[in-house]
Image 1 (cartoon, rainbow, N blue to C red):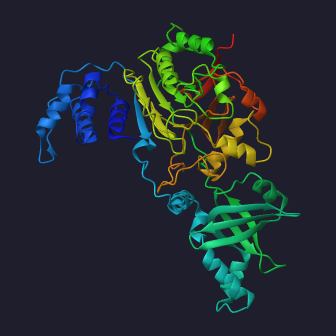
Image 2: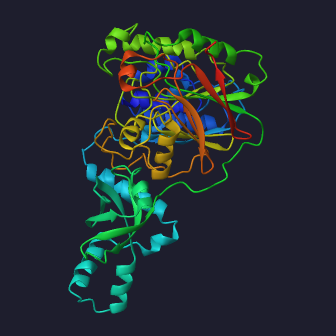
Image 3: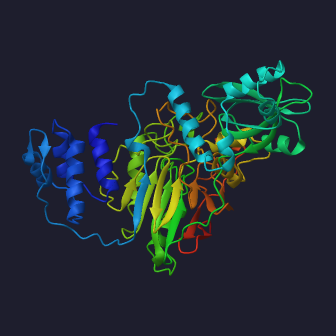
Length: 500
């Protein structure tokens, strides 16, 4: 992503338009445009000026730049922002993504291990975690009865705790074998009881776990699992806003596809502009990716497209979305069909020529976390649901909430590496769920479903695209044309169906 795009996204996400003339002027400059825009935004925030960024603002910054030291610029006349709703972007990966990756996956998985271990550290058992190398050394000593401290030997045989990533999972005749890896090595462990074998069926590769293990009494080489402890989200009371206000959750428009439900989507947009009592309380709209259908995403896609030009698809999508009333703030993340980087995490959409006039939009990356009137909402397009559904027995595209629960339980948005979901080798794993969301919003699977898990409201917002031939081959039966509304005051949801 170039510095102009980064600067533009930064301004928009902070609530500021960049005048087209100012944008053209920025492109002509040979200097640090990100620094210029951030300086202007900081100054406007200080003086509570919500005016568009103009050429004069840029010139004021440039003229005050002496030997690299930028003074506080003079701010031009302002336009008051009429939207007094409280929102905050807590996390957006766009500015943390390294565009020059060194392809070092060791750093990515080391980050995953350390960040998830920190989450596990709140559990009392975590104080007993031992490194795998230490446990293997103890086993070897135990095998030859050479432990100096017999009490330590006996205690170890009875119980020990390890934490690591699942490197492999193998179903055997009477048990399930896992191989767990930490920073010191790997170790095979075995589930033997029916309950633990059933629990192991929902485990996915590269997932982080804490395990209580013991040495097998029959075979001193085997480590037997006594308990599986997930990072998981805790039971909690979700935050609620102080007043009744609503967020509309949608995803997967797929503009440009022959199967895009344009009439139904226009009915949705018209409803947002109506005098309906509920509409008057809608303050936010969250769109969880796949704004357009894109090009070359799946086999023979070109036969299902109205327009094979991605820029025209984006322009038409922007023309539709700009009809959303300006009093509603819109948060938009990309999906795997949208232009730009496909690997997770994804940067915000960079081609913003058509979205630039939309001052009520925050264009952010995938995944992102926003706070809406004190309610923390995690937005994720949901590519990894393909891998989870394909891996875990009993899951299907018709019940996406169950797959989303596994992500919450794993505290990771895409735990499986090397399957259908591409993951970039960033030095930090930004897909670990450090924060516990009040609402977890995803799309991708085109099936509308709502559920709850340990206090978190889970929403998959379906799609605005009828079933394609490719979806038929995948066994996906969409439930499109539905908007999920959530009352932030009570964290209650209901569906608004536009399939008349």
